[in-house]
Length: 293
Ligand code: NAP
Image (cartoon, rainbow, N blue to C red; front, side):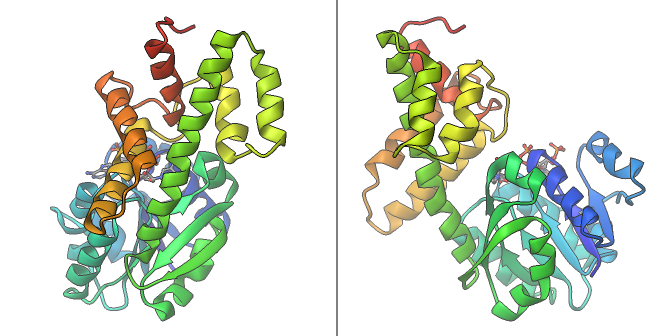
């Protein structure tokens, strides 16, 4: 199976490399060409457009930022649909919404292209190590066909159901991811003022009932004042916006998510959107009147 990969950002570059390491013939594309250099150095072909990727692949994976970006690489000038051929499968692995997934599937069907939504969780660490959890929506038989490719990137692959249900599962996941970060930042903010040693707080949180990926992976970075992404704050804000949109439609009150979204809005407004989600701690320090580290 020839695989094409579009979007070599923090996640996409690591995921595409796993596909290469698993032995699939690979072609890559990135809007900013310089990010393709590590691939070219390994002899992996670099395409000039999403169209060329589609022409030369059986499966096209995209891992871009948001729905308008998926729109751009699929349907924009020199987009995937212009290189479409019978049997082509597109897998959108970025996080957006069930509604967008259903619309991409419908529009691609007009070109004879199959579509799966397959967002991921597990962070940049999971992408590098090939241990992501992948949630897949779409036709079961299409999922079965591409499963070996997904297994090159993830350890846990969950078939969620109809198209859009991968994105729905991912949005549910982001409720927990977002509120987890809020909790860790709050504990650290109070600990600082209360004069509690952060190492001791880390030992307690990471071994007891409060343990989580956020504690294990992000808290050590926060303790060092390392706010580089990982997972960009602007991207979590995007995800929480989609969560609130779906909840509003279904009349489900999500006060925790709504609050977390407002804090991430503040973070983006403070110019910290390109920092990692753990930069939420900076906002707490600002609210406390601390000029951080
Ligand atoms: P990133 O480092 O910001 O990379 C984004 C990629 O998308 C870049 O390759 C960028 O190209 C490309 N892109 C964006 N807009 C584009 C457009 N209009 N046309 C063509 N290419 C475009 O982001 P990331 O962390 O890899 O995240 C990618 C997706 O995965 C997001 O939906 C995010 O929410 C999701 N996600 C992230 C994590 C994480 O921990 N980072 C975990 C799970 C899911 P350029 O290089 O040209 O900018």
